[in-house]
Amino acid sequence: DGLPDWWEKLYYDGGAGGIAVLPTDDTDTDGMNSFQEFIAGTDPTDPKSLLAFNNPQVEPSSTGRIIHWPSIYGRVYSVQRASRLTQTFVTIDSGLQATPPQNEYIDRATGDETYFYRILVEQK
Image (cartoon, rainbow, N blue to C red; front, side):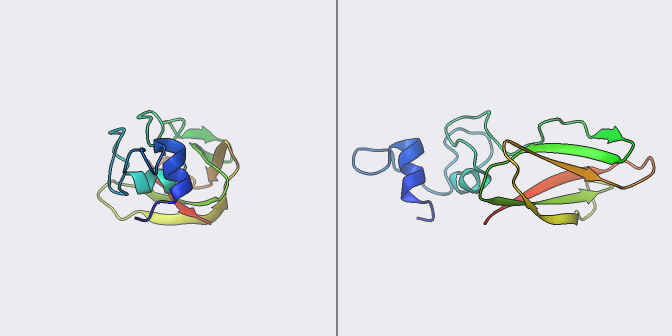
C-alpha cells in the first residue's frame, strides 16, 4: 500500500489483529496523511506531531534570517521562499541533511523585505 510494514506495526500494531491504515488516511486529523507522516518522520497518531517550523517567527540576525524545523535521520530537506503567498515559492537551498532533533537554516537575504518560507522533505 506504499507504507512500510514495520512503520505500520510501530504505530498501528499492523498485521493480524492490528488496525488497517491507508496512505491517504489522516488518523490524527492534523492535516497530514499517513504517507506524509511517514516521509516527514512524524507520529501519525499524535495531532501535535507534524512538520512545522519550531519557531513561527523567523529570527533576524546579523547574518540573515534563521529558521528552525524538526528533523529526523534519513531525510533531506529543501528550503523555499516567496515574498508573497500568491507568488511561486522558489527553492533557495536543497540537499540539506538532517541534523536531529532540529535543523537550522540561515537565509542570507538582505533588506527589510518580508518573506514566507516552507520546508520540503524527502526520504534519502
